[in-house]
Image (cartoon, rainbow over all chains, first blue to last red; front, side, top):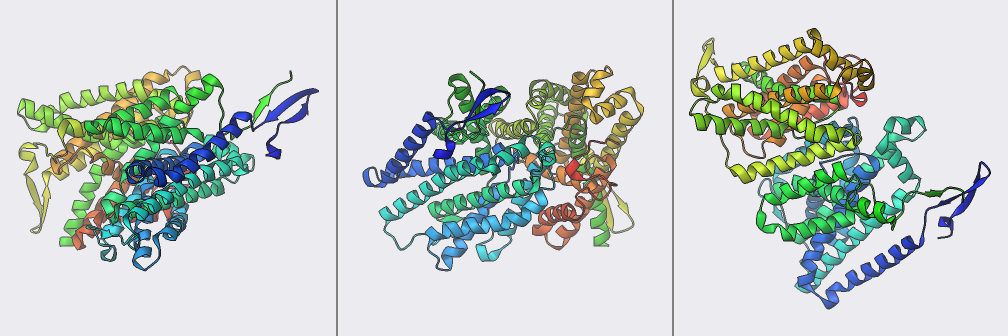
Amino acid sequence: MSRARGSDVKQAGAPVAVSRWNHAASAAVASSAVAVVILALVPYFAGGPAEQPLITLLTFVAMASLWNLLAGFSGLTSFGQHAYIGLGAYALYLLASHGVNPLPGILLAAAVAAVISLPVSALVLRLSGGYFAIATLVVASVFQIAATLSPSVGGTTGVSVPGLAGYGPVLREALIYWATLAVAVASVAGVYLLVRRTFGLDARAVGSDPVAAASLGVRVGRIRRVAYLVAAGGAGAVGALIAMQTLYVEPTSVFNVQYSVYMLFMVLIGGIGTIEGPVIGALVLFGLQEALSSYGAWYLVIVGGLAVAATLAASHGLWGLASDRFGWSLFPVGYRVRGPR
Amino acid sequence: MTWLNAVIQGLLLGGQYALIACGLSLAFGVMRIVNLAHGDLAICGAYLGLVLSTALGVPVWVTLPLLLPAAFCAGLALQALLFGRALQHGALAPVLVTFGLSVMIENLLQVAATSDPRGLNGGTLALASFRIGSRITVSWLFMTAFLTACAVLSCLQLLLSRTAWGRKVRATADDVDTARLVGIRVRPLFATVAGIAVATAALAGVFIGTIGTFDPFAGANSLIFAFEAVVIGGIGSLWGTLVGGMALGVTQVVVGQVNEAYSVLAVHLLFLAVLAVRPAGLFTGHQTAREAPGALG
């Protein structure tokens, strides 16, 4: 990481240190790599009982990171991301039923979702803020009704996904687990690498003030479209994974607004606009789901209350509280400027 | 004749959509807040109507003198506790907070009232109808809903254009900081606007519950239809919202006449088509939706 080293900028005669990388960040990347390797080995030493909950958790991590790219970095509060989860699930069914191996099928399903999101973005990005949010709900509803009205994908009753029928049960479960791990790691790392580029700076400018960003030459429309497309593709991959796990695709379950609600809650509780926050939010939601499973609908009331409280009292969630308190920055996306000594 | 009937029923249905939408429009126009819990607040109004009319043993209309002030106060409280604070946290926070509130309300209603569909006691009005010619029967309930929507829109329009309160609201909608400079107390003004928005939502909820049935999750659809009426009519135009609602209603009923399964899809596609061709809405002049104008009246 040679370009990440601190450099001294001469300004008004006094040296100002501008740095992005730090020792904590190196340690965080190294320990994340170790964690990923350990997670990848889980099927060998723990097997099925550990895989199931981890698949849920990793799906949460992927969904939260991708939604954070949209809302946290680009200011696009889409509550209709379940549109692309559903599309990914149906794309996987169509591919698998035409003999495509579901593992590469995940990538193709992501591509299908991204391609469909392009014309959709041309429409919904005409609106902003809350009206954009409701328009994304309309789009999700359109896809859901369209699936309901299509006999070729089973209409309201849905269809069975051929899935990984050629593999034994143990290997099948392990393959789904590895695929979920790969999608989760790709989502977190992909979002991190993307927002470290100029794109990230532009996106955050667009998110905080689109008019000011445009006046400085940022191509607002393009930034929003790229963020929407990447998030849609990622949601498509998540949808394909969900179809592989449940082996059944029906409109009301795959086009469920609950997915978008979870994305929102995880990101708000963990810390919107940070790399660490969505991962923490995924862990918290996963923990709360286990702890509050006996409370039925109260579960979402409590989690919703936490998310609203986080927005009003701690605008960068749990991670923001921790990093403000201790000065932590494990996955820095901005630059730190230290004044003259 | 069945087509003419469908068009008339659709126009009347449009009034209901406009009734939900006007509160949404008002709150956005003045406070720049899109209340994503607006539909759920309407459904809360329906449940409150159910509780009151069952407890008192009267048709739901009789409970309105209790219900509407309660809804107004709920609006004041929400503004003080949530919306006002959210507005201080930038443009994103109100969207996030109101969506969180929407999920909380839906699940609280689910806990309190189960997901059984409910209906409201509309008294004799619910069954009365009159005839136009020999073939067309119009329900007095639909007619009342439509006339109520027109009355609410007229009152809002008059309040905004003729009263001192309306002048303050319009000034604040144009520029909050300048309004403060000339001595307008913005916080109580916002509170009354939120109160009116929630009261109109609750009134709409009473009609939703009397005309059809409702359950804890019915608010999401009400919100979507209200929003589509707002965009089709042109953001910021109250009468445009009524016309937008009527366009939705006619589309829904006429397509439903052909095939019931396609009626909601047709409404959504009409909305997307308007968004593609005239994003500023069908009934506004030069403004564009992208600029999100707050012009009232």
